[in-house]
Length: 164
Image (cartoon, rainbow, N blue to C red):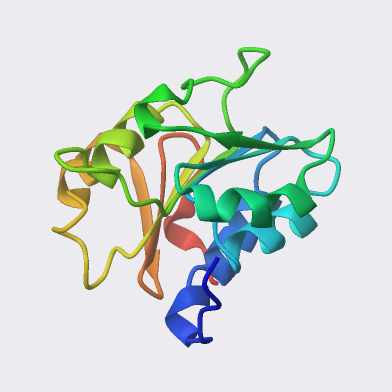
């Protein structure tokens, strides 16, 4: 895997992602992994179930160091393969969407699949809003909070009053 030079936008989602995990109790799903989000989620989830899904083979070797009984790493070929519910049929507490799906699919297509999760966290909602089709997702949720190029959505938790 190529060593990426650190840039602050790679971590702009940290405050919201941390708050989202703190505010929920269900399993966490990470769609698209990285050298920033995966270690953070691994650390803050602790004994909680975390599933990291990745389609890029070069990331799989990197991810193996984080795989435990509670942190599953799923190598997938297409993101539509991911079940909308966790293995025991509970809702996800947090779904973090930051992957690069192949066209014609967009991140929005996968966000829509997880509308029943407690919280859906979307990265890159500022400059790349239309690139990922996010405008199709927002009307499906009752609550929305935006900060740092990241959006958190929910139909269950009022995130509008968050101070992150």
